[in-house]
Image (cartoon, rainbow, N blue to C red; front, side, top):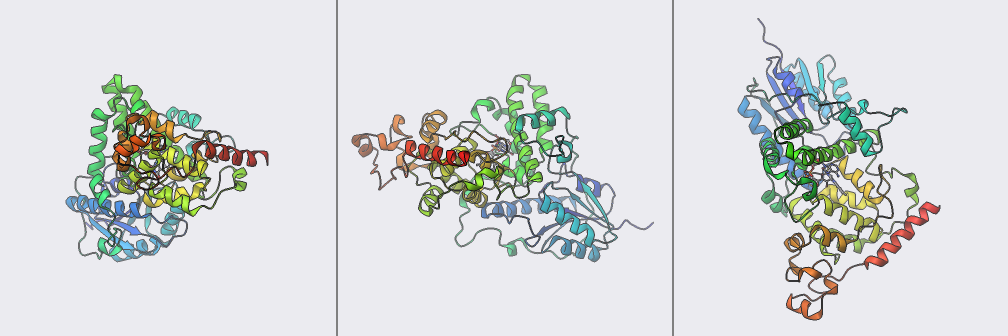
Length: 479
Ligand code: FAD
């Protein structure tokens, strides 16, 4: 009997072994399995990763390499255009088939089509991958995706549970001696300077860590999620976003684990429903991206093309560095720089501040987030920026200008979050922690603050900024 020809599994944004339909299908043929990740910076349209995400990718590939090696499979790293690299590998190992999970994004689908074409007669096998529901399943009468979250999520839920996750293969047959790049040669991690210390301190990328985080969250952290998720001073959310971003865990694994927890602990069901609806936002943003591939560059509402954005490099820098004079904004921007994430409530506050108080184009903020977030997501990042700016799908009303003082007082009432990230104001009393410029000279002196020197004065007055924003928005509405 002749042994089956090798199967190639092409890894992309699905850096895991469990619930990996492509790996599962390849393994079930009993053929030798060669897994490959291609660092493809050549295929047009695929957005190059930002710095923080590159760091995450390196760690995640290392973790995957180890897990695959433990099961006996080969993991090959190569660089170049995916179609050339994979067709080359298929010839090299005389592959019988190539397996991969789909990504519901136009450039990735184009890349996959190019791979299939380059493979000539080699069989290809595509599985659904990164979503709960394929975008083709949720269309309106005009065959367009839905643009409002609530009916979208209702529709997703009406389709019932997504398929059950498939298990990780326990053993794989590998092939030895296939050339692979060394991960270090890809220079995904910063060296000079090495700014990734905060990322290393805060994160353990990889499938095992993702599963452990989900388990711990559902076992305890989720109680009170509906309220705590808005509190940056508490550890009230799952912190799963970078793991989901790189596919170290799949949304359907999260879905089924959460449903199981709700069945076991009915008292948690409303918190779990809320948590699942956040996963629904991820899905919504990805479906939107499927329909609007240029979501990161084009206003969904064309009226915003005439918006009078300001080019203010100084203000943009102050925002990026966390030196705006508003402690909640500065805390968020510094948390982002240090840890590669920012609490969701604070993301909304800092985004609103940039776009509305400073009148800086949302695309500037989106790009900064893209470079600095470990969870930078081609759907969620631009969709949320557009939502905050008021130009997106399901847009927040344009007149909602977050007040950074009230947001701080409401969601960080004791100043715990601000004190963690903005040590300059740490000694101020609670009542002025979110507005240091209102502190008395004595309060400032005993807190060791000299406004304008040790900590900035607000770069714009809230009331004046709000009025200017409303006038700018009115100008495009009237036009
Ligand atoms: P949890 O509260 O535990 O939620 C569970 C999961 O649901 C998250 O891991 C995430 O995958 C998803 N989710 C939650 N909220 C949202 C949301 N508003 N939109 C889409 N998905 C959501 N999220 C990203 O994953 N990548 C991004 O690039 C990103 N950019 C953002 C930019 C702005 C301006 C704003 C306001 C939000 C952005 N978000 C982004 C959404 C949200 O802030 C993060 O998903 C959340 O903070 C992640 O923390 P968590 O995993 O603890 O979330």
